[in-house]
Length: 491
Image 1 (tube, rainbow, N blue to C red):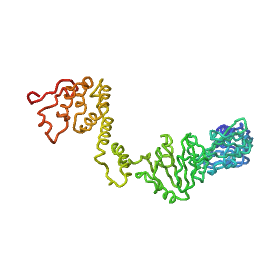
Image 2: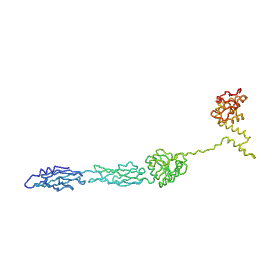
Image 3: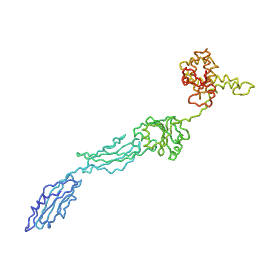
Image 4: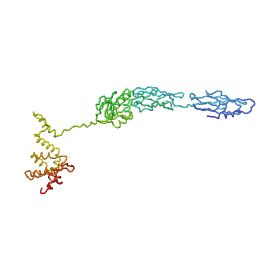
């Protein structure tokens, strides 16, 4: 700020060449300055080169620039608000001028200033206590009020004493392992209500127990985590570390802590995913065992939901092992033929007879053996018999049931692997209607000498065809009642 008013007045009062130097006194207008701002006042005079300027009275720090002739001063904070008297003497070879004026210094409000704050350290679930300090640089100073303006969303939020600036905070598990920024605002209590803010960095250490830290990290992701003191038999994998059961979002999870990475690796080496074994034991559960690991912590769970897999993969690492549901190997079971089971009692009876050689069967057993094989044929080919006899099934079977010798002879003469069972039996459909007819019986017996090989089989002998010179008509194979034809005349 450069003012010219006083210089113009001095110029007017200083005379030109006179006989003797004169002394002039002049009171100048009041000047205004502001704290912290440079104040300059120009002092032009006649014959400036020969003039001598002297600051007789002024505020501390004020001066007159010898090169420019300006009055210079920068009011300090302590100078405002206030009034300061200035007395300047200017001598020349013709006159001496005494100039006096007042400077009114205006107060300039400045916001509070915080002391430099270092980064703070905290421990989960332990109280952090520290004091923040801010001062009012103005003179006179006014009291400061402290307010927490950043970090209010923490759970629980920090608290600060509005008067002393003391900060209190107990970090919860949700802040474990996190770096938190708290913002403190200092407000002046003056009418200006100036304020300033400072960020406080707080580094919260993780839990020393990796299992406890994992629980905290999962809860940060919004998952429900509960400890379960009960032993869940479905997930009681006998790992060597310290085991703990959890329920995460409803899923059973086994946490295993180890004293070192080496101890954890020793258990991981005993998980044979390809062989379906864990710790040397076959995994026989119906669910897939999924294993995660990181440093000194192993996590195992069964058929986890995708959300849990993603969370554990992010917090630990992707699954290190997956054991698929156990599939029992197919055990070959020797099936004893039904005929052998039926013949067993006969053989056992033979063994009981004294003085007889231990033969499986004898000629005396022929009738019983034929009966058993005939019954087995009827049971195994019941569907074929129904297809052949159709609506006459009950009548034909009843008719054969009254003729044991005929039924046994007929059923044991058929080779199911080579003969058309359905087509062959179709020729018997008329038999019950002519049960007493000799012609019908002869007709049935003649069919026994026909060729009834199935179309998709190959016969190794052509003896039946050669002996009878006859064939089984195609329509008879379909169960029709057309007469059998023969290549032999008068057959």
